[in-house]
Amino acid sequence: MKDGRLEMSEVMATQFTDMFLSQKKRDLNSQFFLVKGLRILCDVLLVRGKSSTATASAKILIRERKKLTSIIKQNPEVSPEIIGPISEDFRRCANIFANANKQRLAKKFFLKCEKNSPGNIAVAMEAYGHYNRDKSIIKRLISSTISAGPVIRVNGAYVLQPEDLPSTPAEKVRLALIDISNQGIEQAKVLAERIYSEIGAIERGEAAANARLQSALDSLKPKHDYYEYS
Image 1: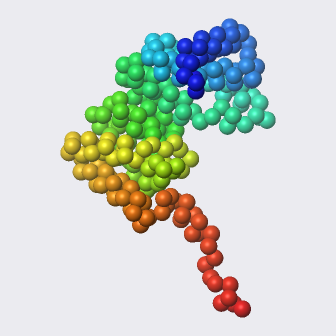
Image 2: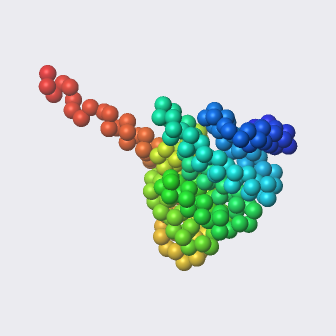
Image 3: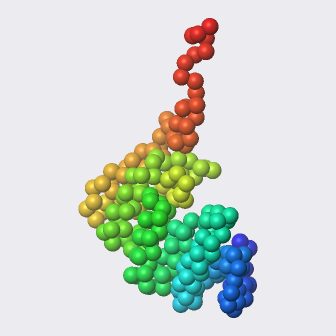
């Protein structure tokens, strides 16, 4: 997929997952690799625009992930973290369902994703991209923008990045907020202006490129001068 060989990726992922699905009984390793293979298959089908096949694969992914979770519970020596966050699988499925015009399922999975990763602005933006007139999605985007903290600059790009969650381009969020403000929501206008101001402050050198990191570094500085006590 990284090389852009999408057709080959689809063929390989399909054969890989079919091999495991044909097994009536699967151990932990087999189930783990099946789930990983289904993720790849879902991703490549989404990119290739194969909506009906992607939808079927997404439903299988959720089903098989549940089975993997159940197997791990029976093996206490195995960390549940090896599966990865469930929010990412919900996010994957939400985008697949949205592209397949399955609105009810898409909104359900966007909501499930955001409930499992509160403040996930990247997902809120994806949901807004599909349903930019849905009041609950707009509300969640505004809320996640507030909780994301200030704009930071990472590798030359301005982003909003909640702690331990994916980032999203700050300018993309700002434009979405301007669109929302045109619907008569004043709070969105205020947030759009805040993002614009924070980008400008970083560019002019008036603010740290990463305010959260700078605050953490400042907290490590000694509170008192050592020589006060000598």
